[in-house]
Image (tube, rainbow, N blue to C red; front, side, top):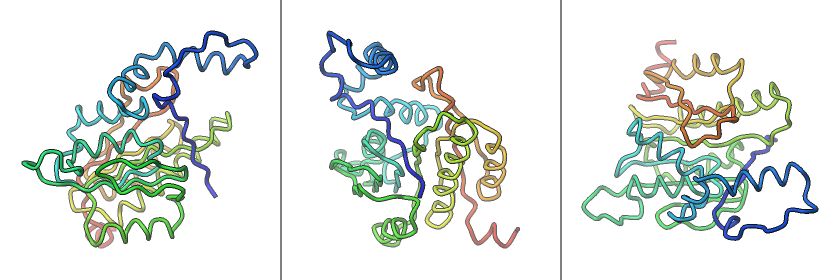
Length: 244
């Protein structure tokens, strides 16, 4: 079973600045210090996002116009819920603007997920399991998906090649699911850590999507190996199977 990492930088953890870090490990001190100096952590708190990663999706959306009112979104590895919050706002699944089409957002994670207005939440569910994916399909009620989002990542071992291999497996899991549920013209956005299997993954994705682009948001930490791969214009499973 693949374990999924969710290193939360949720705003509620940073409401108070610790005055004394004595007794903590060096790595803990460095992590806390970095969090306290991180402008995105403070901004997330001000805007009521659960996590700083919200700004990664916001930046990607501003660059590529990925999300729009009325769309159906599946958010894989959603905890603590910041991407889900952004998706709900952009697709109007909370119907806050009755003048715009009403979208749908389904969020799933192995960790508990607290409710988000406008989203269907499924916590304590491993997306990589077939049974979990079947439950998501049931929730779709026959509706096709416009965007699959995946911020899933493994528990880092510190062994770069191993971590890369596992995150690619998670990306494939989201990709294979997307093939089954996506609308013609749909998109998929996945996070990976750069490495040798990236080219193979991109090649496989391009068999089913018109194009794929790599992007690292400014809100990603400079020392992070993470990049986001965005594939656009799903060609349709039947058409691609016939071609290949």
